Image 1 (spheres, helix red, strand yellow):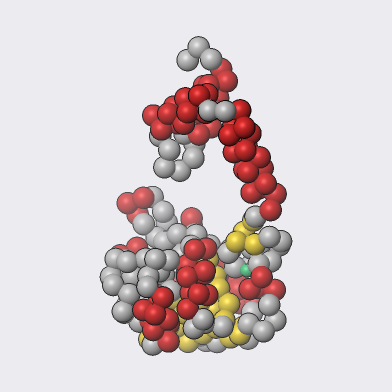
Image 2: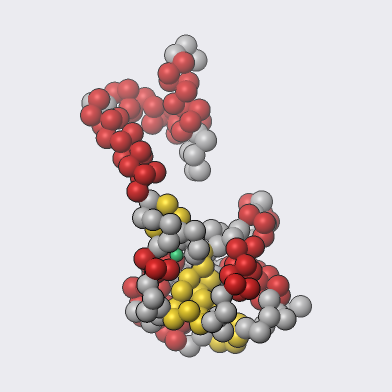
Length: 202
Ligand SMILES: [Zn+2]
């Protein structure tokens, strides 16, 4: 490319998830055509995002300080820990009003096809919490009812099979293959309420 500034933007944009070289180039051309204000707004918004939003150091959900509002809330039930794939799942479950415990966000699910193994998820942090949080009695595995989510639940349950923990899984009701984040509110509430005992197969 003749223009280092353009090359630089394309390189940075295409390093983002879901954006390939071609999309990066389209975005860059769009920005060149746009008003200066738009490009400034975008760069300011990104700076602000980095300054104001982070991941909670305990549960991995979104936070505006070291701990998120749920982890800071002393009224939450510390005996139940709900394990989910993404921060968006926390908001979906909170909206049901059916769960008063705390959360642990894995940041994904085991997916060999996408090259995501247990080491890429916040599973080590989860095991640390199981050891360090003395009030913990129940682990509710609320990963998505997909192949990947089921395999992840299975993997975690097998790691913790000797721990003195009641392990449960959200009940079926959310269709297989669906995602928690976009599940219908009453269906999700029901699947939390009717959660079932869960044991690793192996
Ligand atoms: Zn938190």
